[in-house]
Length: 306
Ligand SMILES: [Zn+2]
Image (tube, rainbow, N blue to C red):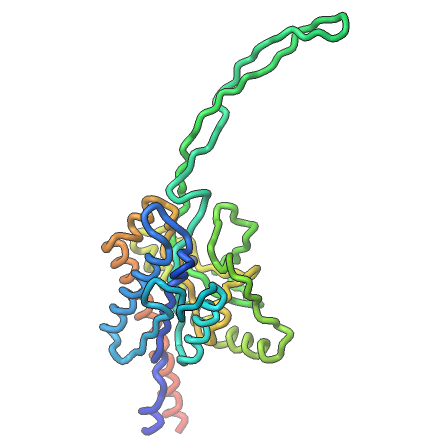
């Protein structure tokens, strides 16, 4: 019985990581920065979870508009995020970000040819003269709306693929400017290092499926609430450093495109933020219940064995 009382609940400590902050605003919309939206949604998510699960410890990597740990560089802040999660013995890591695409938030003007007029002129070459046609082009500035929208959840994974996950590489999605670690110079772990290799194996065996599970639940919730579901994704080319550096199930939720005017309005509105928080909360609850029912099965199994 002592063992049962001491048995660790699946999620005792949750790390919430609002992306960017301080000198790093992340992507910018026409109204607000990604860093601010991520912080607002993260704090609201934490509040909702704290009320529902008062025993769960919730740790934020930042609660104000600073780089986590008040660090002066993005890389140092990334390391701080991961170290804080690991040293706090986190059981789950949720990073909140906004997506961005295109040349400019909202949209942009593009100069396009809308017509041409032919002219002829007489050209003299030696003793000969002949007519030459040349064209005059008409241009117009055309407004191009920044259309990319929707939600996606990232996992970090290595050496393991799942048909449900689309691998994203910078090259195959021209529309996606992405923000993930784009300014970071931190290298992914070296798989030839035995310590790293062991850690990656643990990640693959223990954390990958769980991360995927939660990511799936979150995307389902978004979809059920009328959001565009861009799916669960992983990024293997450059990786998401903070996800691979955290020794626990970890996900990064892109709650919408701040570069899309309509979606940005939703992202900054109290109603939109409440819905996003509600979606992640419901998914979290499902994930937690699943983990608890699994550990209960295990417990029952142990009893039977005796
Ligand atoms: Zn971001």
